[in-house]
Length: 157
Image 1 (cartoon, rainbow, N blue to C red):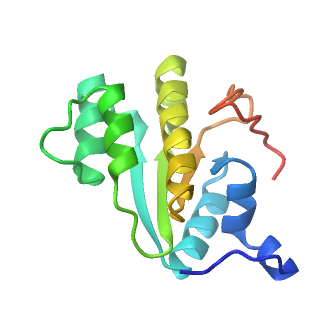
Image 2 (cartoon, one colour; image 1 turned 90 degrees about the vertical axis):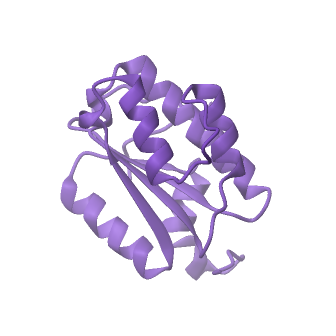
């Protein structure tokens, strides 16, 4: 696992930049997202992607989250269980990157609740030297992102 240190080269790393800003990065352009995913893969991060536009119901959302993140069979398919299972998730390699494409197709309250849970879990994993990075793709930088996980997320990357 790459260890962050006080070296100026570390400060230029994409993962360092994202973690310093609260573990979440928003995108409006597919090319930028693709480039960053490629860089993270090259740095030994595991990538799990979701297309939120396919989540027509909360049941479908929880089913796919459980399936792709390999939650245990007792996953309760609700936000409390999501929080619990994310916190228990084993993060291997240099970290886990979770990509939410088309986040803006979800109800705003659902999207914000989901992001708050993932950001809180990312903070918890940091206590155990594990990295959970969240990338979100929306159509417009007018999409309301504030506040998520009690952090002020901005579009100026």
